[in-house]
Image (cartoon, rainbow, N blue to C red):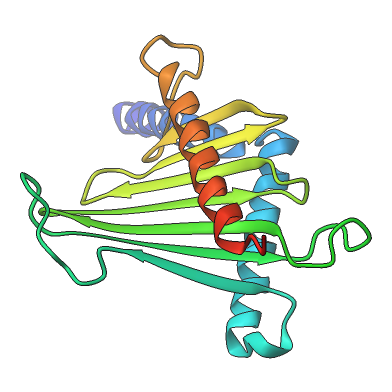
Amino acid sequence: MKNFTGLRIAIFLFLFLLFGGVFSAFAQKDPPEILKIRQLYRQTGERIAEAEKSFPESEVFFSEMTVNKGGTMYPAVGNFKSVFSFYYTYGDREQEPYPNRLMKVTIKTERAANEEFGEYLFDEKGNLVFYFEKINDEPESRFYFWGGKIIRIQRGDKLADINSRAESAAPKAVQAQAAKVVGIFRNSISLD
């Protein structure tokens, strides 16, 4: 009986240590900036979903641009098609009467056998705060920005070391690509 009791205690301790570590990982709180970005993401998604029910009655505007809509094959690539979806609304109406505040951009790309999806989220000041990327069946990547600086990179369910040499170029590339996307948007709504 003593061996059985000792075994039960050993099993209990093992399970406590095992699950204690798992639960403590979940119990760690995200920084307030991450929570604010997630809240903005959720609110923007809800606002867009509501607008999609009836865009004419909404203050959310939607523009779409398709690259290679006809499907002509690209040399050394094959099939290539990219669809940019821009969601925007009014900014400071005293300064600018037209809707020009970019909220979110999604990009769906088919390139050879690859399917890519990217999503950019901007705050009310027009700053990039979040980027999501999914390529084929690879784990998705999430980039969180605050004040123009990277604060978190998540690849799949793992957090990357944002200070590592391996990750140092990725946030800059995302920000450069976001600037290009914003440029495309600005040119598409220009009334001049």
